[in-house]
Image (cartoon, rainbow, N blue to C red; front, top):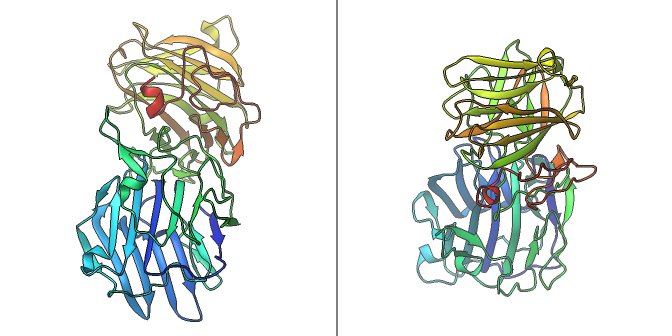
Length: 436
C-alpha cells in the first residue's frame, strides 16, 4: 500500500463500547511507524489507531487528552514473508479490565505487553464514532503520514459484538497452521463492514453499504494472499551494510543506489526440488548492462546462475569455479536486453542435474543450462545491479510495479499470473507452488 490509504465516514456513531476488528496483513517495510487503522477528530483532540511503531511492536490506542486504551506488545513483528491474522476484540462492559480489550495474532491471544492501559468499565471509546475512518495511514486534520507498507486482505469491522479469533480463522487439521475463514458467520451491526474480500475491492461485502474510497495512492491487487504466500524480494538480507538496495511496491520493485558498487538481494522463498518460473522487467537505470537476474544457493553468492543484459549467461559452481555460456558457444543469438524487456527465469530442480532456462519477452534465450553440483541444494531467486539499475519483479502477482500484465499467459498450474506462458510443468514460487 506504500502511499495508499482508504477512507470512509459512517452515517452515524455506532457502538463505542463493543466492537471487533479482524484483518490479514503482510509487512514489506520494517522499523518505521506505520498505521493500519486511524480515526481522528482534530477539533476535539482525539485519535484512535492500530499501528506498528519503529520498534515493530503492534499497538492499539484510543486517545482523548490521555490514553483511554493503549496496548503495546512485547512481541516484535518482523517476518516480511508471512501473512499475519490480527483480531482486536473490545468490550468495555466487562468487569475485569484485561477482558475489555484483547489482541489475537494467528489465533493466539497476546498476553505480554510493554504497556497495558485498559479502558474503564462502560467507557465509550472514540472508535466507531461519527468521524472519518482511515485504513493504511495516520491522518490528523489535513496531514497524512505513516503509511502502511505491505498488503492487507479480508478487513472486517464488527459493530456491537466482541468476537474472538475463531470467528474468522481456524487451525488446519493437517498442517496445524492458522488459516482464513473466507465466509465467517458474524453479525456486522449498523457500522460494520468487510472490504478487501476479493482482490482490491473496497465495496462493502457485508450486508451493509459502508463502502470505502481510495483517499490517495494506488490500490493494487495481488495474487499474494493468506492462502498462498508469494515469493518477494527480501529486505532482511543484504550482502553488506553499504550495499542495501531500495525495495518498494510490496518488495517487488528493486532499485540500486547512487554509489559505484553492486547492490544485491534474494527472494523470501527457496526450493531444492520442483520447477519454478518468475519474470523481471528491466526498468530505468544508468547501468542497465550490469543488471543480473537468476538464483543463488542460500549459503551465499559463491554459487548461482544469472542472466545479464549483455549476451551472456553464467553460473558459479559449488567449488567457486565459473562457467560462462555466450554467443560464441551457441548457434542461437541471445540478443541484448533493453529497458522494458521482460526476462523470464525457469529453474528445474527435479532433473538429475538441475537446469536453468532464460526467456526474453516470451522467447527462449538459452535453454537447459546445466547447474552442476546443485542437485539437492536449496536455492533462492536473486537479483543484482551495479549502481542505479532497477527491476520490477513478477513472482506471480500479475503486476510489474502497479501495472497489471498486459496479456496474461497460459499457466497450467493456475498458480500465479505471468506476462508470458509459463513453461510446461512449471509454477509460481509460492507456498501453494511448493506444495503442488
